[in-house]
Length: 296
Ligand SMILES: [Zn+2]
Image (cartoon, rainbow, N blue to C red; front, side):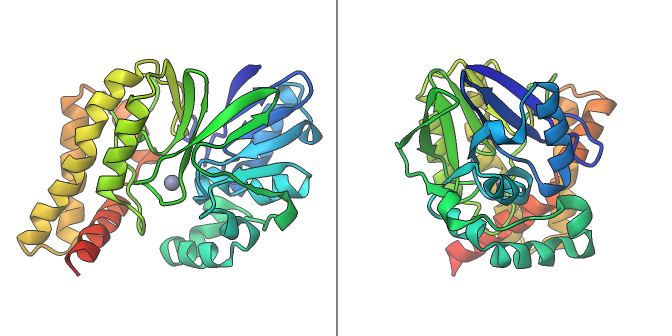
């Protein structure tokens, strides 16, 4: 099996969203499709590898957020089997609810950002439960439920490597700095802490976050990442307890991230790259919602 990283060049930003290609003796598989807006880039990347759409028999999505699974319906309509968490499957078959809630966040930017999100024919959707094994591109891939970022999140492991979606956070090439993507409505601190422990215990050699590319020091990454999820959540809780509303929290949370990035030694270009890929404002909404629910 060969593994390739496709850079989907999301909104002309390289190294923002990856799709991983597994090439086996008889077929290929994708892990993550990227959004519909990146489909042509994905197809061009595959063509460059000598892979036709019909060669892609299996598509695994870590979760159904638009940047990870937006083009899954298109692939399903080409005949690929889409492997997905049980809580994600209904939204691939009927994306209307998912799209309505995304529309509330992105408004008239929806199409520009995400392109078309086609429904997947039900017979092309294969539900994968925690611990299940799939054979795709000639290799065995096991699903590990990794919630916290979303309730419908799996990590896919092949031997000592794993495709972590968003569950190991966002870490961009050329830095050790990581950030916590915590969009509403499913951020869950305890679940995410359990996920990081679970991933760390796998003793992996390399992980492949969707944002972006190989991380070759997973043990060290998880050691730093585990407390960070709580730190982000507590940063916001403390300000909620002071009676601050969303906007000042957004401002302070953004400023704190700038400080963290600088303290981590990121140069201006790297900080700019992180700012293009990661939106801390959304984390404020996700984490405030989490604490609000806990209180109520
Ligand atoms: Zn996500």
